[in-house]
Length: 68
Length: 193
Image (cartoon, rainbow over all chains, first blue to last red; front, side, top):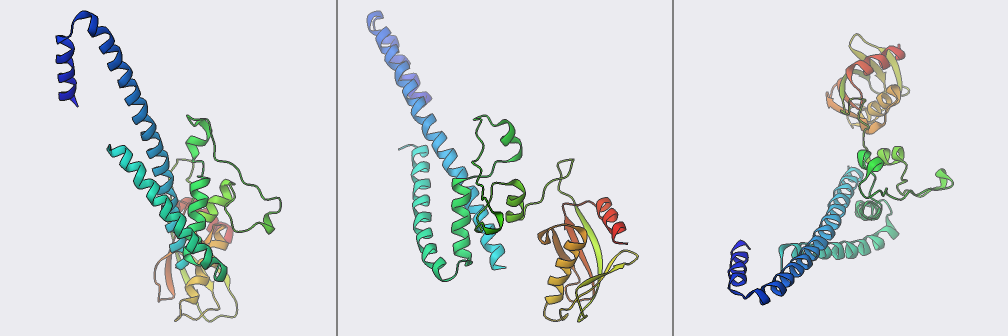
């Protein structure tokens, strides 16, 4: 990821002043979009995973208690 | 695809598998509603759809949400579904409420058992514990079950809080009582007399 970032910054330095502004704007918007996308997936994965694990653990406990 | 996306996909696959498993459980429930598979499915969906509000989070949750409360107008006619009442829930899951210091204590109690007796009864105190008489025979483990019932009743705790730790095949037994420290246990024993 940091290598990619370094390459991008290299490319940005090569651009003229007129091109640099829109490119950085695009870069920032793209970054925000990526962060929002992964934040959404992280929340979904965390919430769903937590409930799944808690549910399975509680259910296993109850089932084994009933069997005993 | 990123690891997060894979994780969500795996979770969804597990969820679908559990839906199918619950379908099988539904068929089993028609013959035996207390089958462990049925209980597993019932408890899982109850826990999944209505997760219990845990102590600290319930009062000051960051999201400001608490699990919905299910109420039955008549508790006696209610099916065996978890109420959101914290006491019912603790009882259903076999949870023990922590003490004032936030710790769950355990105390040991020595028990002398007279098996094959006329009735199940607490006879009184011994120098280091209590003496019980139980109707069950010593050989088939029935007396151990009765011992747990009697001790829990005598101490005013739930049967799941009492565990037989020593003397499974002897008349002198030791039980551990969860949710009560040694001092509280001694106080209870004082009241037994």
